[in-house]
Length: 256
Image (tube, rainbow, N blue to C red; front, side, top):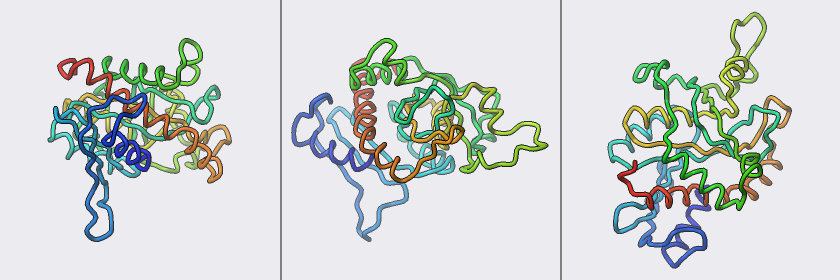
């Protein structure tokens, strides 16, 4: 995703790119005086009116997600959107499908003290509509075909990378059962944390994930499958995210 953002960012500063709004005047990349990137590096597409786009590679896990959003929130961004991969939990999903989160199951455990689990993390209409419109425009799908490709539902986030390997015998509630009872359609390790911190700090948030594996259905993410997935989906997924920001900007930041 970062490689593609760098390619598009440089191209947008040099001239117009089809399907993405113009107006960017600079592309700022992280400095690497020691030859190493910082732990969670950021790239900035700059606009004169301060409505540009920053992309941050947060790595893996809810601890990283909490740390970076704690720090970004004090800069008062107009919104943040989570783009990433997820495990599909439903038979009807296929690798490469999208998931637009409209609810979250929080099993990340990093914000339990700051934001109790009984606090609902609602979807935000303006962000949801912008992401859905971006998916429709970039994929050129509508109606049932759009719904088949992009499922709207609950996303569960866990701090246990190996949740599907936990013992299930003599355990009252397994993660698999909780995810089923919550009607979760996708699982990752960061989305609920980012949304919860957006709710906590009053930063508008949204989540669009792409199914890269289906651990409950024998479709694990093997290297060959992953390479094919990256070729087919990363460019499209990133363009959807950029276009969603275009729609939010066009609607006016007062809407947020």
